[in-house]
Image (tube, rainbow, N blue to C red; front, top):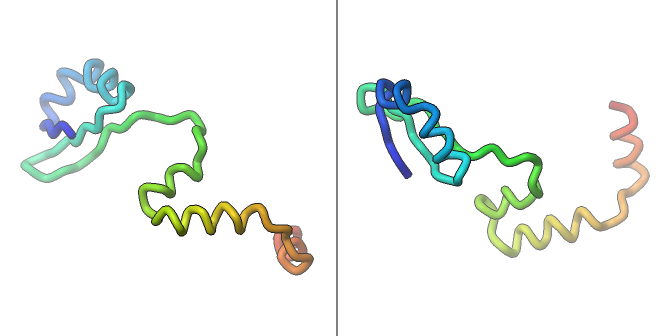
Length: 82
């Protein structure tokens, strides 16, 4: 992870964007405090895969199994009512 100040970010924005696109995380700080983060933009790549960073492997497996189970009539009716 790279940390840079706002002035450096302004002068090197194109370079930083290329680095972020390549997968590097860049933190932009002001007065020594983190203000923003540049990260690569993923075009809809397996959104549930993002949960692996926050959930245990077991929790991810249970979530996947639950999503494959049939939905009961009450739940379907609740979704249709919205």
